Image (cartoon, rainbow, N blue to C red; front, side, top):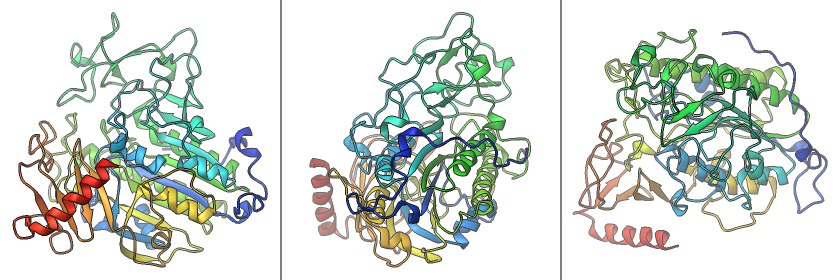
Length: 508
């Protein structure tokens, strides 16, 4: 893997130029020149036990550990949902995703599900005078539901507050397998237009099902449609050959774009959302990491993600920006091992526990689905150490509203936990609604309630505990982290009060 230098900086974007001066006279906002830069890094399907600073002894993640050593590591940091799109929706809007019926796992051609009139997290940061960007995994939809991939796609991330964007539309395993820069497919040859369908294949296009001999990575279930870079995906695509990504260099491409953005805005406050694509399937890491973890492609992809974090931290230090940059690292949801490809993730797992001591993982109502790594570093302000405060990614909106003195413009579910994020208080949230694959659980204090729900106890292919049961489940997370002792029969009054509270949230 080549060494990435700070070159060819992306120029300041017109949409933000007007807000980068002194803004203290507008709405009580702080002087933009004194505001910290903000870098939010969200991994994809990374579990609580997948990093060494959270207890893994089988995989070493020195760069994520480096963040934790210089910052604050939260033991009770949550995403809003146990799946990707809803989780990312909660982060960008400050709203519970289950309130939006479209906030579900999206196909690659889905329309944008974020209301463009909302004061989103990046839009709030723009109001405070920040240059904003989204780089990496997106998975919140694009366009209006009838996308022409050969022209500018609107709406796109700029319409929710990201003035610059370089993204993959959905996931590694979904078409279209191309990069989209500011609403246009990057490197698209107009003589080879791109077409995408999630209903039927295009004439003459091979699939993983019909031509398995063309594959270098084979599916274990599903994932047997269009072939890109020797990997069959979900959905069908045709054309766009010059624009198609190469999985092995994806981390390198995104890191370079992120470092270019940082370099181009070194003299102004910036807000950068960086969506890691690892360790989501298909796991095809660069040759530098292939075979290095001893746990197959999933472990290797975690090493690659750790490298990407390190490359960004190095870049901040080289530019003298590390001291006054808030870096937040987390994951969109809990871990999954076999998620659709034959990559020996299960066979090579050994003693590794991707969710650590937590029960469940991706798709689950148990804590392993939503309790994730959550680290905050800001050398100028944040105290180093470990915090047991309950914080949620959804809370960044209200917390950054407090930090920047930009008022919230609508009612949100986000809560101001800025003192907890800075380490000046151990008090975070007291209540949190948690979303699994389709149903809700409720955390209040040290108790979590999982109401009865229909559905299988384990997912069909990934063999993950869902938390579905025909009876109430009540756990004390302070004394029973692994959620093994159901206290519902012993504490009926607690069940009744938490049930009523959850019903009130749902009614709202």
